[in-house]
Length: 195
Image 1 (cartoon, helix red, strand yellow):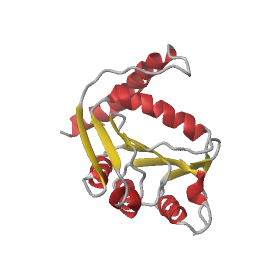
Image 2 (tube, rainbow, N blue to C red):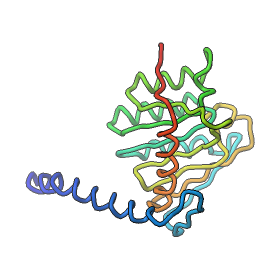
Image 3 (cartoon, rainbow, N blue to C red):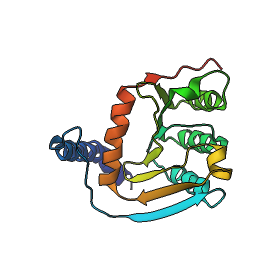
Image 4 (cartoon, rainbow, N blue to C red):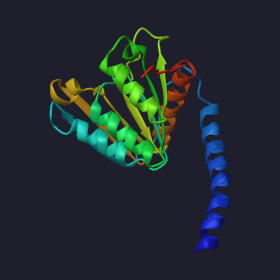
């Protein structure tokens, strides 16, 4: 058993590099302003709001993370989503968020939410290079993608008509969204809390 774990620990970096090389080759032939076609695969789950499972599906997605969460957000004020991300960080998941800079303004719920994540050790950034950073995406473990109209807020969960779409086990789709995440993260600034 110990020998098997040691071998896996030795092979893990090699497997990771091979996967990254494959991904790099996948993106080499894609111009920056082209759309991306990926194969349909994995399991799809959908939910809606108000109060029709949207928030629960987002929490299920976050709670499924074993290694990594990459998140893009416009409105970011949901206490249950913040709590789920903090739980993920506490269990060793690498959590990174890029949120619209409006969340950092004044004494807002968004600022409190971002500060909570920073204080938990998450990589939190804000972006202001676009009039609105309107993305609502979570990529989990480089294979699962959550997206839809659902802002990460109480209004989205309980008052607005929203949709949530999760494509489980589709690494090619995840790579498309991770490329978008990486671009936005490069254009963002580290969020510094004063809490």
